[in-house]
Amino acid sequence: MADDDAMRMSEVQLLDARNEGSSSSQPQLQQAFPPPPPFYKLYGAVSGGSPIPPPPPPPVEGEYQLFGELYTTEDGIPPLSVRQLFRVDPYGRLDFKGELRCLNRELLFTFLDLLDCLVQRPSAYARAVENVGLIARNMSYLLNALRSEQARATLEHTLKVEIADREEAIRELREGADAARALLRRVADGIQGACKQAEGVQQAIDGG
Image 1 (cartoon, one colour):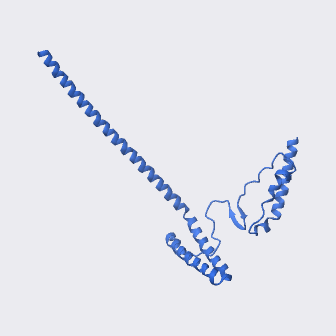
Image 2 (cartoon, helix red, strand yellow):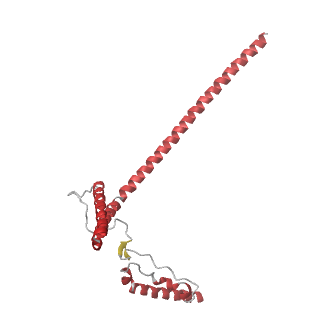
Image 3 (cartoon, one colour):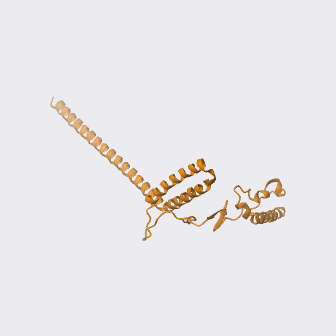
């Protein structure tokens, strides 16, 4: 009974903490360094001395916010939330290598412009930082789109390495088998020669 009462008390405390967190979650998400979630109040001395900790919250499904950014638990490439800088041809094809090179060059020039802003006109640095972030997000989106190609290339390389290792092992086994056959032939020839020599000696003894 005491355990059941402690469990119900923990569940009530967890519900209160969730309600407190949900009511104050919106202003916390807008802060650069928000305070920790209120669930820590359910543990230790401030939890009322309950020996049974509350159960963990259920897993998040779908979209959720973290430090003001929107994330999702669904598999797939996250959508591009900023202005698109790369070009797609009318047939829907995209030159990943060429576009990433262009964005990389543009990122270098933008970073130099940011350094110039910090030295010459520090009050205008925000626009340069925004441009750097825009290019970086586009490059991150293209790199995420290449994850399937990267996984396929990694698997292909792994299979090639395994095939090469097995071919090398088979070659070593064949060389070892050939060396063993040659050794057996030499031993057989030596035994055959020794037998003939013994027969000759026996014939000489018998003739004498």
